[in-house]
Length: 219
Image (cartoon, rainbow, N blue to C red; front, side, top):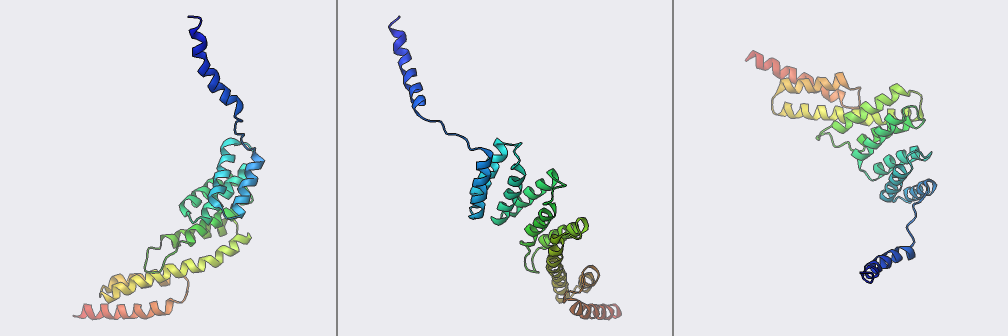
């Protein structure tokens, strides 16, 4: 029995010996991870940047670099055009750090995520509406911030898209001779949106709708 024991232990020594001779992979410290992430971000390698920033958050949750990592994760998703993930990351940053000086930028970027998805006037306008609402919130909360001025310029495009959509739908109803429905849409252009080049056409079709409705009532 005494001779059996050393034979059993030999494989254990062999495998443990392998571990002794192979150097364990060292984890990077927080400064190295933020440096890697920023280099990757600046080189437009956004997926790797997200990976570095996420590691920093997971391994060093109390590091002074975590706030920067959270913000750059959102920025990386934005550049990747993964807008849903970017909005989630920006909103998380705002909720966690409501007094941070970057919040006006963060709200603006949330608006940009929606703004960049605005489609043609014949398509769904949810993105335009969400962008407009976000930019309005930014202006309401930080009226004098430089990003609020940028938001005001973007709002014009949102309003033009929304007004154009209502006019497009009104025209569709008008051509189908659904004059009441068309009238509601054309009036919506005048009521809900400042003049962005559609009001004159809307007024003309309002008159046409009312004229056709009057003729219908007389028949």
